[in-house]
Amino acid sequence: MSRPARIASARYPPGQARHAAGQARHAAGQALRAEWTKFRTVPGPAWLLAALVTVTVAVGVAAASAAQCQAATCGFDPATVSFSGIYPGQAVAAVAGVLAVGNEYSTGMIKLSLTAMPRRLSWFFAKAAVLTAPVLAASALAVAGAALAGRLILPGHGFTPVHGYASLTSATDLRAAVGAVLYLTLIALFSLGLTAAVRDSAAAIGLVLGLLYLFPIAAAVISNPPLARHLDQIAPLPAGLDAQATIGLAGLPLTPWQGLGVVALWTAGALLLGALALKFRDA
Image 1 (cartoon, rainbow, N blue to C red):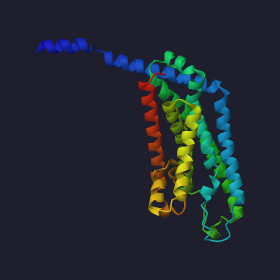
Image 2 (spheres, rainbow, N blue to C red; image 1 turned 120 degrees about the vertical axis):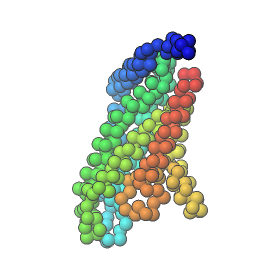
Image 3 (cartoon, rainbow, N blue to C red; image 1 turned 90 degrees about the horizontal axis):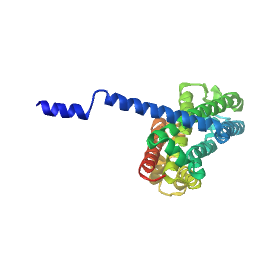
Image 4 (cartoon, helix red, strand yellow; image 1 turned 45 degrees about the horizontal axis):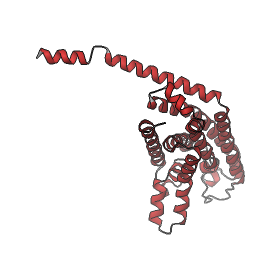
């Protein structure tokens, strides 16, 4: 019985697991620092995040200024009106995610990056983490600006207690705002994952925008209501917009949190696809 014990001891010496874990943490920390340095020293990401905030707030202000509610049955969702800028803003978030990886391939920097960081998955998930933080911050700023604009503008356009809008700062509105922030962030990560899989910025942008916008178009032209509803349930854009609704929830294809869950599944699938492509294909 002592011989197997000696073999096991020689094969797994004391402290080896701790040493390996320490090396992995050190590699992850190096990857995060390197990717953060790239992110903050390249001007493109900052301009894209500024555009995300500007587009989301500007379109939200325009939509709130145009909306009118003259009766209790006007049927407008104030959160949907305020967050109208999410619809074009998601395209900016998608481009930010695409370029985070696509620029590496278009410039040939990917070979240098993977030479400096041989642990490919550490590099990939460091890239995702570094993208997540600033996109999350920019999305929060954009949604907060759009929500503030709606809070200031909509009451003067008939969104008052007389017409059934007792408050535009309720817990439901807060949930819609959180859903909008998370949706924009997930779209950026979704785009990053797909770009790592296809390795071409133009192809990735076309694929991402196609998946976002073609599903709703198909659902709108299909004459079969159950099929159209199923498309809205599985498509990332309609599901993500459901997460921002505050009225008429019973008539939605999905509940708000279910809708956000669908977008999270699309994002997880894209990241998994990108990670597998990066690990098993040559750079």
